[in-house]
Figure 1: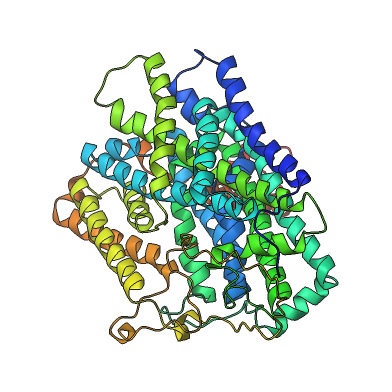
Figure 2: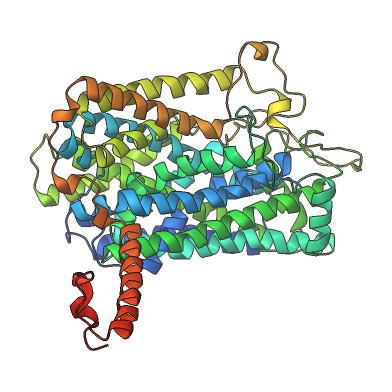
Length: 589
């Protein structure tokens, strides 16, 4: 493997530049065309006008980012395909969000999900939720901006920070000038580009290796098809239980209460369309996940005999996919550009979602309640805030799930527990945050030992370097993208102090934070007069809101109707006192 850095061909440049120019041009054109029109609410959150399909595609693009395209294949390369079980988590999270959170947020029609916290509790609770969301989302946008910059700096011989600056510049144009309605539509294009880029890597790898069957066979021999591991040990990094249960809680905090997702499905024309959008989104995120897992298996098949990190050809796991693409696409101009365009599209779709959400929360929760401004001024402020957010988030290089569990518990208590009060939920969130910070710090300081992370075997037996092999990809000053709260550990990762600390799987951090916050919140609420709490009915989940209630009601009526008609045939009468609620329904049948 001796592909030099900066091997972009003319075709690569054309394909990649098209995506960049297309994104910036859309922002400039529509920003000029729609200048002075609409208000802050329409710009930030859209309106109830859209059907399920475009919203579902935008939901898929929002959190299937450049990090997914770069880090999931690396996860599979080092640890195996068991991470693919996260698709079950998507489904469970969507079902929970559709039943518990969507009905309440859609009925209230609020611009910020954190406005609900003030309606249900008080201003202090709303402010705490807002601050935690801003902290979490700024971290996410920092990583998502860094990911395409890393890929671009490797393949185009561009300084890393210049690449980050150019990425942020495009995001600024796109997010500051394009409102939520148009962003929803453009994300449909981005998700297609993302899928095409991932698929191009799979197809080219299959051609290089002699077919998909060879890739599957290599993965089986290398232990990468380790999907069914039912070990219940919570300290294990990835098992069926940690991925499915821990992942479900984490993704519920995304689909259920995250402003970026809620404001998207709230743009649907009806609650039914919003539910359909959530369920259709499952197929989109699963398709991207499966393609990313398959790309990881392809990477292992191609590089199984010569691990590039071990021999120093890359300095961080996150450089693996750009390195692979550079080597397998040398004879196919344009494919490298398509892959970089896919990574870039993933970044733009997620960053636009996060920044619109940050601007919406800032305007609705931090400006409007305290400063009187006209709608025109609010709209201009919203656009200016997107520029500020893009600049600040470059300072952040890691993503954290610390706040997800406590925030999920905060909203869950508000929606499901009528006796939960402000003192209880605030106490629960604070305790939950302390615990999740403690667990995360422990994992960073004392990483889990190899017997818990289970890295799979990699060799360099097949390496055959020519005398002029170019190893310029070894760049010790490149920062490392953390693809998950727990860093990747090689087989030699040891720490003499780990015997004093054992962290549960990072996927359980959100779950532990949620459970802790729930328990503390319930206990404190009951001890501080929660039973006397009076809550408006529309702030709570009602049985009529849930799809399960309507399915139960429909099934019950069908059964009773069937029994009624059978009794009519036996008795010869259609006036049976036992079935007064359906006498009129079936009269004359």
